[in-house]
Amino acid sequence: EDKGQWTLLCLAAENGHKTVVKLLLDTGKANLHREELRTALWLAAQKDYKAIVKMLFDTSKVDADPKDENRQKALYRAAKYGHEAVVKLLRHCP
Image (cartoon, rainbow, N blue to C red; front, side, top):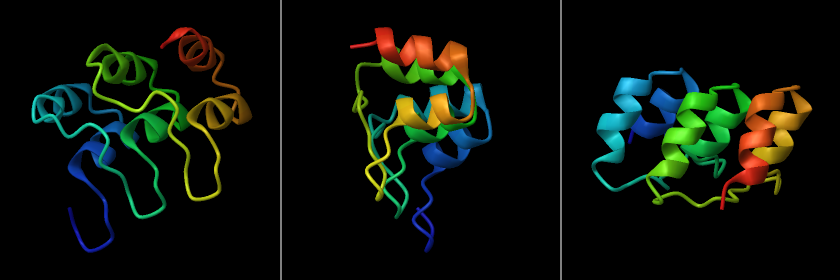
């Protein structure tokens, strides 16, 4: 993590780097978050990275219902930005 509380996993997820996300998930620290409580799942959902959202769920290591400091859920953020495929995925994941 850096001083701004960005984890490598959050950076990779927010920027759509699937290979890096996969490598970092192997460390077992999938729920690390930024200072605003935004997890990698939350960030990937907001940016419409369906493959990364699915990858995070498939590990069974993530909080399936993360909320940020404003109590906004990943599902809300995906819906707000019109990311229909991610919304559908989030609604059907455990």
